[in-house]
Amino acid sequence: MNNNSIILFFLLLSQISFSQESTYRNPIIAGDFPDPTVIRVGDTYYAAGTSAEWAPPYRLYESKDLVNWTFLGGLFNNVPEWTHGSFWAPELFYRNGTFYVYYTARRKRDRKSFIGVATTDDIRKGFTDHGVIVEWTNEAIDAFAIEIDGKPYLTWKAYGLDNDRNIEILGAELTSDGLALAGEAFTLVEAETNTWEAGGIEGQCIVKHGDYLYMFYAGNNCCGVNCNYMTGVARAKSIKGPWEKYKGNPILTGDEHWRCTGHGTLVATPNNRYFYLYHAYRGTTGIYTGRQGMMDEIVWDDATGWLHFRYGTTASLQAETPVKGTQQSSVGNFEDNFDSDQLNHEWMWDATLPKPEYSFSDSKLALKGKDTPVGSFLGLRPRRSDYLMIATLDVVGAPAGICLYGTRNNAIGLSVRNSSLELWQISDGTRKLLLTKPFKLATVTIFLEVTFAQYCRFGYVNEEGASAYIGDPIHVQGLPQWDRSAMPGINIKGLNIGRFNSVKLEYDFRMPKIGM
Image: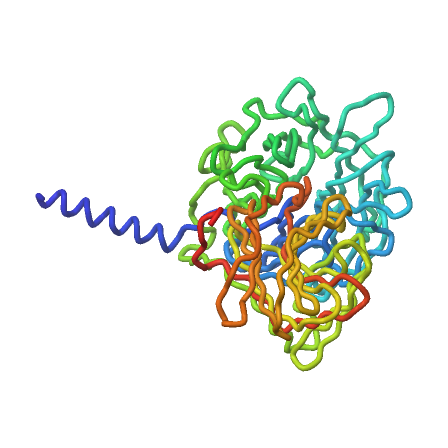
């Protein structure tokens, strides 16, 4: 090796070392986190996303570097009174010392989705709801708020327009307090049915740069096996337009690594770098882990007056961090030994049902059962496609245990009661017992193993202290819904109390081959 080769080798080595210290890998918020919104207040970033049918509504995260995020809990401590699930697309907004969230939810009385508003002075303490702010014909979703020349505006996606008009993005001025529409609604852009926008447009966000307002928006079908979501951009010198769509749209599409990229929000760093937080499905596991929180940088092209994503038209696998030297943390395991008198904020429940009743004593969670197909359920949001959930509980007279929950009428689980283990599956509300096994211990440890986000297998620790499977792997088809993934958790069916000693969710474990 000559001197030039040696110099080149060490230059490359130093670049690799720098890359390891100053890059991140997508996703930045792993697990099911659709329709993300992000704002910066001072030196702190806040992000929230769709929670669909899970409560507390809308998962909230905090970060100092846009790469490492701390989960703070739900935006709401209690489900807003007017709502009945479908908690989609929250949009955070900060103005004059007040945090706002404009959010989509389904209304109880007619099951139509409209936009509500809530506020807080301290985002860590939860929001106070102010009810519906946009009720637009058949449906209004995907709000986005912006202040322009000192005036606040709200934009949203509108269905059900008169005279057979297509899906549009509408807008209106807000009152100074941000709690009501102040002016007549106007059209910003509408979907073009003979283009990549054929499935509709939504998930818009707007940012001012130079002489223009730029609108990022998602087009086509967002979710499920056949999704083909993409991202486009338009610009205008006034929010009322006219808006010009970029001829090079879409500017962000899917590939074999990440599919259905879209519905995000743009945020600027203190040194004026712009990052787009959006969602996508991982190509290798499909829809089963859900739409995960992604981030990519955009670059302005002042020569053309447009912009592009720094790393191309597909999601980046690895990219330069917003803050130089940032080290990206790995996904951590979860453990709850129930040694507090408060429920850990990672736990969630079905928002379409009453909140489960529970209490704590002697480092145990006492979960009151319900006489419904699954019973009372508390779940955890998995952050990877492969995981192991382990629960230790006391044997009682009603079936208590762990399960993988899709809806109140679709789940797969392993329960223990009296002197037997019961492997069961619920499909469309009908409970089928798959397998039973005699069991003699008064306290039992059982586990759920999920692989590739698509196969689940249950097991237990026997009287000799050894782990053993019960039943064969089961494909989870039918559990994930179009707007959310399946959730592992604990449950008890029947009018009794389940007593749980501990629950773990582990990601770093040795997995057997499917079918063994």
